[in-house]
Image (cartoon, rainbow, N blue to C red; front, side, top):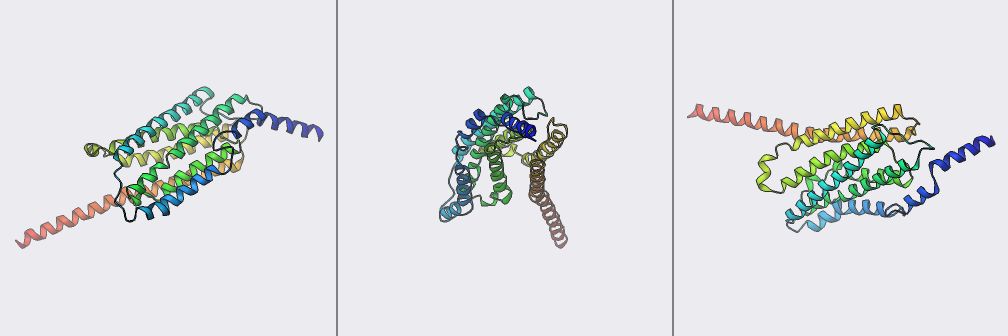
Length: 282
């Protein structure tokens, strides 16, 4: 029994060295348990209550220039995070796994990458602030708010408890590619002259759905071939949220594009019928 306890203690030391633990816990937003929850609560209060209340008697703000600059920033930031993630995958393989006793370098690189991803996700909360300032409240949906919030919370928790998942590198790469395309679209949409060229908006949602499916497949394969087992609760939590995202995004796609298409078809058919009736009465 004594030997088992000794072996267990040695494993814990290999898994969480004092140097790595101290480094992570000293980082901005990580050292204290308060900043990230405060950011999220402030975000919910502003976009769901205080912002709309403030804008109630005001005209929508003209934020075209700010939006253009913001979208350019997000494209560049997404390009940066994608580059980091792809470099990690090329260096440590497409299906990396971290086990007790592995070189700490791999965990340091992954944790720093996760921290960069966290900052990127926090910066994306400004999306919703612009919706409020422009009074585009129809865009502030449960899907939008939940998607932004849960990505931040889960990433922060993973870093906070020193439990980053190597599969996160693939997730960050796939997510980054989608966001480069998405923010490019939003950046171009701020120019009225480009509107006629932006017929491909619905394909961004399609790309997001494909992204979740590919990430889920990668997570399954990573779990099966990992050199050391993950906690089942972590695996199940990731799969649950991927299924939830697929459901929510698919529901959004159907309501936004399929139903609108059917509505337009019905309207066109009714117009044709009315025109035929008018011709008969002439």
